Structures are given as C-alpha cells and as structure tokens.
Image (cartoon, rainbow over all chains, first blue to last red; front, top):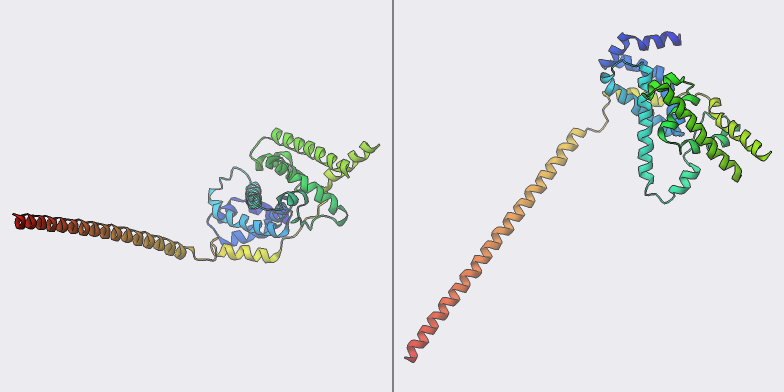
Length: 191
Length: 106
C-alpha cells in the first residue's frame, strides 16, 4: 500500500496537480511525507517544537515553489533538499540571536533545548553528547552524516540531495566520523 | 586498556543514531499546515494594509518635514529683511539728524 502511494506521488499527474496548486494533491503530499520531514527536522534540530515549526515552513515553501521543480530529481529528493535548507536557516537564525547572549558559551556546551523523543531512554545521555558534537561539525559534514545515520539513505541518494558526487559524500562522512571520534575521545578522556 | 575502553565507548556512541525510533508528527501541526495551504500559503495577518499605512505615514512625515523647512526659511528671510529695513531707517534718521545739526550750527 505504502509503495503504491509512493509510486503515485512520483507520477507525472500527481506532480502536475501539485504544480497547479491543487489542495487535494497537497493534502496527499503532506499526509505521506510529514513523518519523513518531521524526523529529519528532529534529527537536525533536536527539539520537537522547532522541528514542528520547521515542518510547517517546509510544506509552505514546497507549496510556493513547486512550480520551479524541474523534475530532474525525484520529489522525495526535492523535499529532503528543502527540509535541509529550512533547518539550516533555522540554525542560522538561532545562532544570530544567541550571538549577543550572556550564556552563549554555556548553551553551546550543554544544549538546554535538547528534546528528542526518538532516543531510547538508556541511550539518552550518550545521544546528547553525540548531538552536541554533531552540531559542531561543518554543515555539509553534519548533513551527510545525519542523512546516512538516521535516514539510512544510500550515498547515491545523499549525493542527489546535496547536489554533489557520491565520492564527495563518502569523503564528507569519513571526515565527519573522524572529527566526531576525535571530539568524543577527548570528552571520554576527561570523564 | 584504558585507551581500548575509550575507543569502545566512542564507537558505541557513534553508532547510536541508528537506534533512534521514528516519530510521528503532531496531528495538530498537520492541521495547521493544511490550514496555511488553504490560505494559499499566506500568513494570517493582512500585510497589504499594514504596508499601505506604513508608506502613507512615511509620506506624511516627509511632507510635514518639508513644510517645516519651508516655513523656517520664509520666517528667516522675513526677519532678515525686517532687520535690514530697520537698519536702513536708523541710518536715514541719523543722516537727517546730522544734517539738521549742521544746519542749526551754521
């Protein structure tokens, strides 16, 4: 059933419906892809409220910009791309706001907004530490790592989303893991 | 031994994200998205009017400023001409008085 729906969303008629701003087509799109968008936002932002707000922005952006969708990639890739861009915008806005804050250093170290319901209770502490260091990675490394680890996408799919080559994605994930290993080793040594 | 233990901890932490459970988005958020889409993706506030008010206020301020500047300039000019004419009258009176004195003395 799910595959059937997926095939339907990739069909030319469905995309044409979206391009003509048909509310019914959008309802189907939101219904099918809302969990995908929400989970990616959650893994990127690690906060339920921010993930929900960003999810809304993502669908409104898709609604407004679907006419520019050239159909060179799949609709799923297009949605992933918009979601990542919106998450980055959100992080940039947050950073700009915090630039003049008094507790900036403390917040960077402890991430008080951390709220990820998808993490199993026994892994909570470890996940918080890992996300703290993931957030310190450059955006491209973070994106490649999060997509590979949480969305279980192939290197080819990630390359399509990030508009780069498969080799570049491999290199980004390799560097992300190397940097994370370095930071985590340093952290565990001080514990 | 210590390094081995740390290495193990690091590897375990690195692979933790794969165990994350998928979450369902809030149905209320879904409704909000649909409501926004029904409004053609527009925000609730009617921005059109606020923009009109903003620009008309700006125009009003510019006009008021212009009026004040023109008024100030005109007043200044009038004052200056007043001063000039007073000085001229005084001078005339002085010359008349001088001439009168000279005439009496003569």
